[in-house]
Length: 241
Image 1 (tube, rainbow, N blue to C red):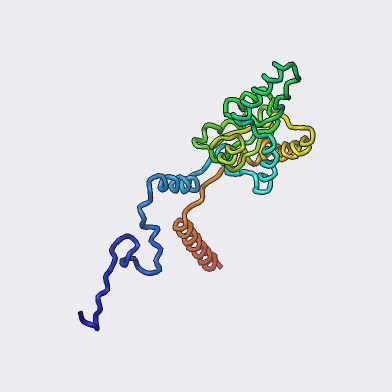
Image 2 (cartoon, rainbow, N blue to C red):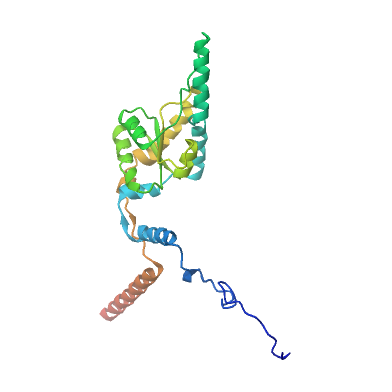
């Protein structure tokens, strides 16, 4: 081997020697189909004009407000299957022994789209929480309108997985509170007022369209065109003098 030209074996695999140093090649990666679809969907939601009824789902409550709401809802998580089985067993044993049966769980979160819809229609729900990322959105698209009609306060929150953990599920599109314990009534009232202010009685939310945001290239082209028009106008104004 020539010492002036030592052998340097090269790796031609992915990310090997061929890759130009310091260049980001993520643009040229063939991403999985589901990644491409979700990115294209996000871009389309920016470009297209989005009606107010859909756009309202992008206006979820803030991080601090959500933390306070979830703290309250954590107290009213429904029983697990094992806990319910044990309670029924204890009740049966107490009844058989002629003792007083243990009290049933009075206040707990209600979930399931049909169940929550019935509670809203019957005006039994005190507060409804809707996830902002339900897919397809048509499942809950009509629910804010129903809540407004029935004057039931609602909040749009992030996200369906977080709502799901409250009710021992992977995800939940909606959850509802029917009543709370006496010590939490003041806090519930605060969240009802928040729902009325931000969603139920917010007329701006029902009028504001979303989307219509162009890409960087289009924005640059429009800016260039606007500058050219401004220069022409300035020339015309100068020639008129």
